[in-house]
Length: 306
Ligand SMILES: *[C@@H]1O[C@H](CO)[C@@H](O)[C@H](O)[C@H]1NC(C)=O
Ligand SMILES: *[C@@H]1O[C@H](CO)[C@@H](O)[C@H](O)[C@H]1NC(C)=O
Ligand SMILES: *[C@@H]1O[C@H](CO)[C@@H](O)[C@H](O)[C@H]1NC(C)=O
Ligand SMILES: *[C@@H]1O[C@H](CO)[C@@H](O)[C@H](O)[C@H]1NC(C)=O
Ligand SMILES: CC(=O)N[C@H]1CO[C@H](CO)[C@@H](O)[C@@H]1O
Image (cartoon, rainbow, N blue to C red; front, side):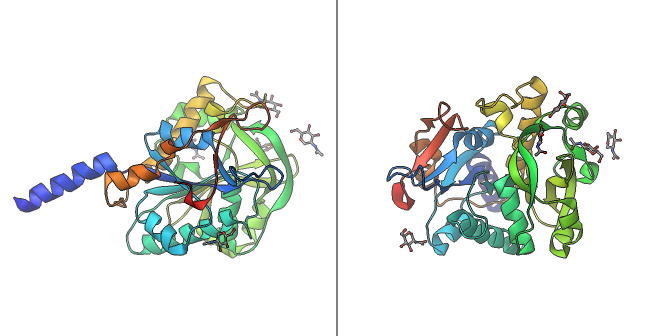
Protein backbone atom coordinates (compact mmCIF):
# COMPACT_ATOMS: atom_id res chain seq x y z
CA UNK A 1 0.00 0.00 0.00
CA UNK A 2 2.75 2.39 1.01
CA UNK A 3 4.66 1.48 -2.06
CA UNK A 4 1.60 2.08 -4.15
CA UNK A 5 1.00 5.51 -2.63
CA UNK A 6 4.66 6.33 -3.02
CA UNK A 7 4.70 5.30 -6.66
CA UNK A 8 1.49 7.08 -7.32
CA UNK A 9 2.71 10.34 -5.84
CA UNK A 10 5.99 9.96 -7.68
CA UNK A 11 4.18 9.55 -10.97
CA UNK A 12 1.73 12.37 -10.34
CA UNK A 13 4.47 14.68 -9.18
CA UNK A 14 6.52 13.98 -12.23
CA UNK A 15 3.59 14.46 -14.56
CA UNK A 16 3.30 17.91 -13.11
CA UNK A 17 6.92 18.82 -12.79
CA UNK A 18 8.75 17.25 -15.72
CA UNK A 19 9.27 19.05 -18.95
CA UNK A 20 11.98 21.53 -18.07
CA UNK A 21 13.95 22.06 -21.21
CA UNK A 22 17.25 23.87 -21.27
CA UNK A 23 18.14 26.16 -24.14
CA UNK A 24 21.79 27.08 -24.40
CA UNK A 25 22.62 30.76 -24.58
CA UNK A 26 25.57 32.00 -26.60
CA UNK A 27 27.93 34.95 -26.72
CA UNK A 28 26.61 38.08 -28.37
CA UNK A 29 28.83 39.00 -31.30
CA UNK A 30 31.52 41.42 -29.96
CA UNK A 31 30.28 44.09 -32.38
CA UNK A 32 26.91 44.18 -30.60
CA UNK A 33 27.99 43.27 -27.08
CA UNK A 34 27.08 45.62 -24.21
CA UNK A 35 27.22 45.11 -20.44
CA UNK A 36 23.53 44.23 -20.50
CA UNK A 37 23.78 41.89 -23.44
CA UNK A 38 26.69 39.53 -23.06
CA UNK A 39 24.82 36.43 -24.15
CA UNK A 40 21.46 35.71 -25.78
CA UNK A 41 18.79 33.26 -26.84
CA UNK A 42 16.53 34.03 -29.79
CA UNK A 43 12.95 34.00 -28.52
CA UNK A 44 11.73 31.77 -31.35
CA UNK A 45 13.50 28.78 -29.74
CA UNK A 46 11.74 29.48 -26.47
CA UNK A 47 8.33 29.70 -28.14
CA UNK A 48 9.08 26.56 -30.13
CA UNK A 49 9.78 24.50 -27.03
CA UNK A 50 6.87 26.05 -25.16
CA UNK A 51 4.53 25.27 -28.07
CA UNK A 52 5.00 21.58 -27.30
CA UNK A 53 4.31 21.93 -23.59
CA UNK A 54 7.65 22.36 -21.87
CA UNK A 55 8.99 25.16 -19.71
CA UNK A 56 12.30 26.72 -20.63
CA UNK A 57 15.35 27.12 -18.43
CA UNK A 58 18.00 29.29 -20.08
CA UNK A 59 21.40 27.63 -19.75
CA UNK A 60 23.78 30.50 -19.13
CA UNK A 61 27.39 30.81 -20.20
CA UNK A 62 30.38 30.78 -17.98
CA UNK A 63 29.34 28.56 -15.11
CA UNK A 64 31.39 25.87 -13.46
CA UNK A 65 31.27 22.25 -14.53
CA UNK A 66 29.68 21.39 -11.17
CA UNK A 67 26.91 23.92 -11.78
CA UNK A 68 26.20 22.44 -15.20
CA UNK A 69 26.18 18.93 -13.71
CA UNK A 70 23.63 19.97 -11.19
CA UNK A 71 21.54 21.60 -13.91
CA UNK A 72 21.83 18.46 -16.02
CA UNK A 73 20.33 16.46 -13.18
CA UNK A 74 17.47 18.95 -12.88
CA UNK A 75 16.32 19.55 -16.46
CA UNK A 76 14.91 17.01 -18.90
CA UNK A 77 16.55 17.90 -22.20
CA UNK A 78 18.74 20.48 -23.89
CA UNK A 79 18.35 22.38 -27.13
CA UNK A 80 21.45 23.78 -28.82
CA UNK A 81 20.16 26.64 -30.94
CA UNK A 82 21.48 28.12 -34.14
CA UNK A 83 23.82 31.08 -34.10
CA UNK A 84 27.23 32.29 -35.08
CA UNK A 85 29.86 31.31 -32.52
CA UNK A 86 32.81 28.94 -32.78
CA UNK A 87 32.07 25.23 -32.39
CA UNK A 88 35.64 24.79 -31.14
CA UNK A 89 36.47 27.61 -28.76
CA UNK A 90 33.30 29.47 -27.66
CA UNK A 91 31.51 29.13 -24.34
CA UNK A 92 28.68 27.59 -26.37
CA UNK A 93 31.13 24.89 -27.49
CA UNK A 94 32.36 24.34 -23.95
CA UNK A 95 28.91 23.96 -22.42
CA UNK A 96 27.67 21.80 -25.30
CA UNK A 97 30.51 19.39 -24.67
CA UNK A 98 29.77 19.17 -20.96
CA UNK A 99 26.12 18.29 -21.60
CA UNK A 100 26.90 15.97 -24.52
CA UNK A 101 29.35 13.97 -22.40
CA UNK A 102 26.90 13.85 -19.50
CA UNK A 103 24.05 12.70 -21.77
CA UNK A 104 26.13 9.87 -23.20
CA UNK A 105 27.40 8.77 -19.83
CA UNK A 106 23.84 8.91 -18.46
CA UNK A 107 22.42 6.87 -21.33
CA UNK A 108 24.92 4.11 -20.66
CA UNK A 109 23.46 3.92 -17.16
CA UNK A 110 19.88 3.76 -18.40
CA UNK A 111 19.09 7.46 -18.08
CA UNK A 112 17.55 9.09 -21.16
CA UNK A 113 18.53 12.76 -21.64
CA UNK A 114 17.82 14.15 -25.12
CA UNK A 115 19.96 16.77 -26.85
CA UNK A 116 18.68 18.52 -29.93
CA UNK A 117 20.92 20.65 -32.15
CA UNK A 118 19.54 23.13 -34.66
CA UNK A 119 21.83 24.60 -37.35
CA UNK A 120 24.90 25.69 -35.33
CA UNK A 121 23.76 23.08 -32.81
CA UNK A 122 23.83 20.45 -35.55
CA UNK A 123 27.33 21.54 -36.53
CA UNK A 124 28.36 21.49 -32.87
CA UNK A 125 27.13 17.89 -32.57
CA UNK A 126 29.18 16.92 -35.63
CA UNK A 127 32.27 18.34 -33.95
CA UNK A 128 31.57 16.68 -30.61
CA UNK A 129 31.16 13.30 -32.28
CA UNK A 130 33.90 13.52 -34.91
CA UNK A 131 36.42 15.45 -32.73
CA UNK A 132 37.32 17.48 -35.81
CA UNK A 133 35.78 20.18 -37.95
CA UNK A 134 34.43 18.48 -41.06
CA UNK A 135 32.32 21.35 -42.39
CA UNK A 136 32.40 22.32 -46.04
CA UNK A 137 31.15 25.55 -47.60
CA UNK A 138 27.73 25.35 -49.22
CA UNK A 139 25.48 27.87 -50.90
CA UNK A 140 22.66 27.55 -48.38
CA UNK A 141 22.38 30.96 -46.76
CA UNK A 142 18.78 31.92 -47.27
CA UNK A 143 16.68 29.20 -48.76
CA UNK A 144 13.71 27.06 -47.77
CA UNK A 145 13.83 23.51 -49.15
CA UNK A 146 11.93 20.22 -49.05
CA UNK A 147 13.68 17.36 -47.24
CA UNK A 148 15.10 14.48 -49.25
CA UNK A 149 14.26 11.66 -46.86
CA UNK A 150 16.71 8.80 -46.59
CA UNK A 151 16.04 6.55 -43.58
CA UNK A 152 13.18 8.49 -42.08
CA UNK A 153 10.78 5.54 -42.02
CA UNK A 154 12.91 3.56 -39.62
CA UNK A 155 13.69 6.53 -37.38
CA UNK A 156 12.55 7.50 -33.90
CA UNK A 157 12.18 11.12 -34.95
CA UNK A 158 9.62 10.62 -37.71
CA UNK A 159 7.87 7.55 -36.33
CA UNK A 160 4.79 9.46 -35.17
CA UNK A 161 4.65 12.09 -37.90
CA UNK A 162 1.38 11.97 -39.86
CA UNK A 163 1.69 10.87 -43.47
CA UNK A 164 0.43 14.22 -44.79
CA UNK A 165 3.13 16.08 -42.87
CA UNK A 166 5.80 13.74 -44.22
CA UNK A 167 4.51 14.29 -47.73
CA UNK A 168 4.50 18.07 -47.27
CA UNK A 169 8.05 17.99 -45.87
CA UNK A 170 9.17 15.95 -48.88
CA UNK A 171 7.56 18.21 -51.48
CA UNK A 172 7.20 21.75 -50.19
CA UNK A 173 9.83 24.35 -49.26
CA UNK A 174 9.25 24.01 -45.52
CA UNK A 175 12.75 23.74 -44.08
CA UNK A 176 14.64 27.00 -43.76
CA UNK A 177 18.39 26.89 -44.33
CA UNK A 178 20.60 29.71 -43.00
CA UNK A 179 24.06 28.21 -42.98
CA UNK A 180 27.22 28.68 -44.96
CA UNK A 181 28.74 25.43 -43.73
CA UNK A 182 27.45 21.88 -43.93
CA UNK A 183 28.37 18.27 -43.30
CA UNK A 184 28.52 16.78 -46.77
CA UNK A 185 27.51 13.18 -47.39
CA UNK A 186 31.05 12.67 -48.57
CA UNK A 187 32.48 13.85 -45.25
CA UNK A 188 30.02 11.64 -43.41
CA UNK A 189 30.74 8.58 -45.53
CA UNK A 190 34.45 8.92 -45.00
CA UNK A 191 34.34 9.55 -41.26
CA UNK A 192 33.90 6.50 -39.07
CA UNK A 193 33.01 8.45 -35.95
CA UNK A 194 30.05 10.13 -37.64
CA UNK A 195 28.98 7.08 -39.61
CA UNK A 196 28.86 4.81 -36.60
CA UNK A 197 27.09 7.39 -34.47
CA UNK A 198 24.41 9.03 -36.64
CA UNK A 199 21.76 7.72 -38.95
CA UNK A 200 21.10 10.19 -41.77
CA UNK A 201 17.36 10.86 -42.00
CA UNK A 202 17.38 13.46 -44.76
CA UNK A 203 19.77 15.20 -47.10
CA UNK A 204 19.68 18.29 -49.29
CA UNK A 205 21.86 19.79 -51.93
CA UNK A 206 22.87 23.30 -52.89
CA UNK A 207 23.05 22.12 -56.48
CA UNK A 208 26.62 20.89 -56.12
CA UNK A 209 27.15 19.39 -52.69
CA UNK A 210 24.82 16.90 -51.03
CA UNK A 211 24.74 17.61 -47.32
CA UNK A 212 23.01 16.16 -44.27
CA UNK A 213 19.90 18.06 -43.24
CA UNK A 214 18.55 15.78 -40.49
CA UNK A 215 20.12 13.04 -38.41
CA UNK A 216 19.64 11.10 -35.20
CA UNK A 217 22.13 9.09 -33.21
CA UNK A 218 21.67 5.33 -33.53
CA UNK A 219 22.12 4.60 -29.86
CA UNK A 220 21.59 7.88 -28.03
CA UNK A 221 18.76 10.42 -27.80
CA UNK A 222 20.79 12.94 -29.79
CA UNK A 223 19.24 14.72 -32.77
CA UNK A 224 20.27 17.35 -35.24
CA UNK A 225 18.73 19.45 -37.98
CA UNK A 226 20.86 21.70 -40.13
CA UNK A 227 17.74 23.77 -40.88
CA UNK A 228 15.36 25.77 -38.66
CA UNK A 229 12.04 24.27 -37.53
CA UNK A 230 11.42 27.22 -35.17
CA UNK A 231 11.42 29.84 -37.92
CA UNK A 232 8.21 28.83 -39.72
CA UNK A 233 5.88 29.70 -36.87
CA UNK A 234 7.90 32.39 -35.10
CA UNK A 235 10.18 34.40 -37.37
CA UNK A 236 9.06 36.85 -40.05
CA UNK A 237 12.09 38.98 -40.98
CA UNK A 238 12.93 37.17 -44.23
CA UNK A 239 10.56 36.65 -47.14
CA UNK A 240 11.55 33.01 -47.72
CA UNK A 241 10.38 31.80 -44.29
CA UNK A 242 7.41 29.50 -44.83
CA UNK A 243 4.24 30.25 -42.85
CA UNK A 244 1.69 28.02 -44.54
CA UNK A 245 -0.47 25.69 -42.54
CA UNK A 246 1.78 22.76 -43.49
CA UNK A 247 4.89 24.75 -42.58
CA UNK A 248 3.65 25.53 -39.09
CA UNK A 249 2.19 22.07 -38.57
CA UNK A 250 5.45 20.40 -39.58
CA UNK A 251 7.41 22.57 -37.14
CA UNK A 252 5.10 21.59 -34.34
CA UNK A 253 5.77 17.88 -34.89
CA UNK A 254 9.50 18.43 -34.46
CA UNK A 255 8.95 20.41 -31.26
CA UNK A 256 6.53 17.77 -30.05
CA UNK A 257 9.00 15.00 -30.76
CA UNK A 258 11.80 16.68 -28.86
CA UNK A 259 9.68 17.62 -25.85
CA UNK A 260 8.33 14.07 -25.75
CA UNK A 261 11.88 12.78 -25.59
CA UNK A 262 12.39 15.12 -22.65
CA UNK A 263 9.46 13.43 -20.89
CA UNK A 264 11.42 10.17 -20.70
CA UNK A 265 13.71 10.88 -17.78
CA UNK A 266 13.10 11.66 -14.15
CA UNK A 267 15.56 14.50 -13.73
CA UNK A 268 14.03 17.07 -11.46
CA UNK A 269 14.77 20.11 -9.38
CA UNK A 270 14.82 19.87 -5.59
CA UNK A 271 11.48 21.61 -5.58
CA UNK A 272 9.09 23.42 -7.84
CA UNK A 273 10.31 26.61 -6.20
CA UNK A 274 13.93 25.91 -7.10
CA UNK A 275 12.86 25.39 -10.71
CA UNK A 276 10.76 28.52 -10.80
CA UNK A 277 13.74 30.66 -9.90
CA UNK A 278 15.50 29.71 -13.11
CA UNK A 279 12.65 29.94 -15.59
CA UNK A 280 12.96 32.07 -18.71
CA UNK A 281 9.82 33.86 -17.46
CA UNK A 282 12.08 36.05 -15.32
CA UNK A 283 13.51 37.60 -18.47
CA UNK A 284 11.94 39.88 -21.04
CA UNK A 285 12.62 39.47 -24.74
CA UNK A 286 13.59 42.59 -26.68
CA UNK A 287 11.99 43.41 -30.02
CA UNK A 288 14.78 43.26 -32.59
CA UNK A 289 12.89 42.49 -35.79
CA UNK A 290 13.61 45.97 -37.12
CA UNK A 291 17.39 45.48 -37.04
CA UNK A 292 18.24 41.81 -36.66
CA UNK A 293 17.08 38.60 -38.28
CA UNK A 294 15.27 37.56 -35.07
CA UNK A 295 11.94 39.13 -34.15
CA UNK A 296 12.72 38.97 -30.44
CA UNK A 297 15.81 38.14 -28.44
CA UNK A 298 16.42 37.38 -24.79
CA UNK A 299 19.59 39.19 -23.80
CA UNK A 300 21.44 38.24 -20.63
CA UNK A 301 23.96 40.22 -18.63
CA UNK A 302 26.06 37.29 -17.59
CA UNK A 303 26.26 34.20 -15.54
CA UNK A 304 24.81 35.51 -12.30
CA UNK A 305 21.95 37.36 -13.85
CA UNK A 306 19.23 35.34 -12.15
C1 LIG B 1 23.28 30.16 -54.56
O1 LIG B 1 21.97 29.65 -54.62
C2 LIG B 1 21.00 30.57 -55.10
C3 LIG B 1 19.65 29.90 -55.05
O2 LIG B 1 19.33 29.51 -53.74
C4 LIG B 1 21.35 31.01 -56.51
O3 LIG B 1 20.45 31.99 -56.93
C5 LIG B 1 22.77 31.56 -56.52
O4 LIG B 1 23.13 31.82 -57.86
C6 LIG B 1 23.74 30.56 -55.94
N1 LIG B 1 25.08 31.15 -55.85
C7 LIG B 1 26.17 30.51 -56.24
C8 LIG B 1 27.45 31.25 -56.04
O5 LIG B 1 26.14 29.38 -56.69
C1 LIG C 1 7.80 5.34 -45.85
O1 LIG C 1 6.48 5.13 -45.38
C2 LIG C 1 5.48 5.76 -46.19
C3 LIG C 1 4.14 5.62 -45.51
O2 LIG C 1 4.00 4.39 -44.89
C4 LIG C 1 5.52 5.17 -47.60
O3 LIG C 1 4.57 5.79 -48.40
C5 LIG C 1 6.91 5.39 -48.17
O4 LIG C 1 7.01 4.77 -49.42
C6 LIG C 1 7.99 4.83 -47.26
N1 LIG C 1 9.28 5.25 -47.78
C7 LIG C 1 10.31 4.42 -47.89
C8 LIG C 1 11.57 5.01 -48.44
O5 LIG C 1 10.26 3.26 -47.54
C1 LIG D 1 11.00 25.85 -53.76
O1 LIG D 1 12.00 26.81 -53.89
C2 LIG D 1 12.71 26.76 -55.12
C3 LIG D 1 13.80 27.81 -55.08
O2 LIG D 1 14.51 27.80 -53.91
C4 LIG D 1 11.77 27.00 -56.26
O3 LIG D 1 12.48 26.84 -57.46
C5 LIG D 1 10.62 26.01 -56.20
O4 LIG D 1 9.67 26.31 -57.18
C6 LIG D 1 9.96 26.03 -54.85
N1 LIG D 1 8.99 24.95 -54.78
C7 LIG D 1 7.74 25.15 -54.39
C8 LIG D 1 6.85 23.93 -54.39
O5 LIG D 1 7.31 26.22 -54.05
C1 LIG E 1 16.98 15.75 -53.58
O1 LIG E 1 17.80 14.79 -54.20
C2 LIG E 1 17.75 14.83 -55.62
C3 LIG E 1 18.59 13.68 -56.15
O2 LIG E 1 19.85 13.66 -55.53
C4 LIG E 1 18.23 16.19 -56.12
O3 LIG E 1 18.13 16.26 -57.50
C5 LIG E 1 17.39 17.28 -55.50
O4 LIG E 1 17.87 18.56 -55.85
C6 LIG E 1 17.38 17.16 -53.99
N1 LIG E 1 16.46 18.12 -53.45
C7 LIG E 1 16.80 19.02 -52.51
C8 LIG E 1 15.72 19.92 -52.09
O5 LIG E 1 17.91 19.10 -52.02
C1 LIG F 1 33.64 29.10 -14.99
C2 LIG F 1 34.16 30.15 -15.92
O1 LIG F 1 34.27 29.94 -17.09
N1 LIG F 1 34.44 31.32 -15.35
C3 LIG F 1 34.91 32.45 -16.12
C4 LIG F 1 33.80 33.45 -16.31
O2 LIG F 1 34.28 34.61 -16.93
C5 LIG F 1 35.30 35.28 -16.24
C6 LIG F 1 35.66 36.56 -16.96
O3 LIG F 1 35.10 36.65 -18.21
C7 LIG F 1 36.51 34.35 -16.11
O4 LIG F 1 37.50 34.99 -15.38
C8 LIG F 1 36.07 33.08 -15.41
O5 LIG F 1 37.14 32.17 -15.39
